[in-house]
Image (tube, rainbow over all chains, first blue to last red; front, side, top):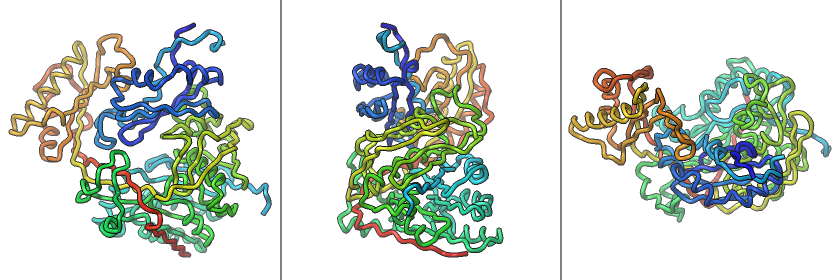
Length: 110
Length: 456
């Protein structure tokens, strides 16, 4: 096992959805996608964003694209248009996600 | 109709304010049948309603008309049709402005179409009386909460009326609040004669629209592997080669910068995505879990396999309402003790505002110390005390004058607060209106769109 950052095994994009945001994450290989599907849970993401996301986290799976899509409710510092925070639209929630550290089997990192 | 007919559709504007180079270079640098452009965001309609109140001729995207002045001669010469949701709350005003530009350019034989009927602001009382509740889709709140403060109400309409305008010979079609994918789906319905019940095809066109709708965000813009993207300055905006069977290839003009690969397209498919199995649109429900992507040569991605199903019996409605004011001012504090000094400065500011007689309630105050990992809060730790940070300090209020007092007291912190402060180049901040967003639904049978095509 090796501790790596998600940015080493995935790419991501995020955007606003009302008062929340979505973070889509694409694994770089089908095997890594299976690994993320088993390990990147809603709870794990909620814990990672605990000081940003104050609502529910929901996960959707797109097996065809090796993509997991997370909806982060109440993650933009209040009302969508009323918020004053710098990242008002959750534009960099994608890279915030990719900073997560995970224990990944060496066989998947070859 | 030949089954190998290919229709070339591009998007040259991902949002109101996108680079003018997008449409100019798309028209100039390669073959094209349709140029689509997206101008509207949720808050845009509210701004446009205000412009229309002041001037009945206004209330549409004036940038669009000025852009047309630069591309229309070439569009007409090359037979490129233009479709844009630039009409805002006044497509007819936009039509008149385009006619004026066409005449000034000395062009003739151009047909301009508009789609109206999405703006339901004036019909709200009767629609509510007829049983439409317009409850807030996010939280179920009744529309009565905001009805007195409402500033715009528009239905997200679909592709059919745009396709009808094309069938009537329109070279330019302008809509109000059509969905972003609709401006891309419409030419496919028209060119290939797709039925409005052929949901797999409509879903394919909708997915195509979703890929294109943010312009260069699918050709290497905002892409994680940014170091692999060549020539950002000359980034090519997306061009799709569409086939009658619903398959298509995303590419860009030869010789342009940027990158089209499975990952850049996947990145855009993930943008603002909700439930991928049920991507709701006015004309169909698309299933993003059926999309197949395949690299098909350099800077070419083939898209196929897309399945769709019947749309819901309702349209989504985008309403906006006045929700008070907000303000934020900026100052830069340098170390030592940059964080402590910035925090003290914010406290001094709120204390001074209170000395005028009316304190800003705690919950309406805002302080953000930019440079302390605010974008990665709780995720990336600060390794050492920063030697410079930006204080962003402000408030929300229904009392605009209270925010003006705060605005006046930001600059005095430089001479009457802690040392090590600079960066007031932006000048005194101004309160801006908070435009509240209220998503709702409406029964489709109560929405009546009309198409008008005029020749200049």
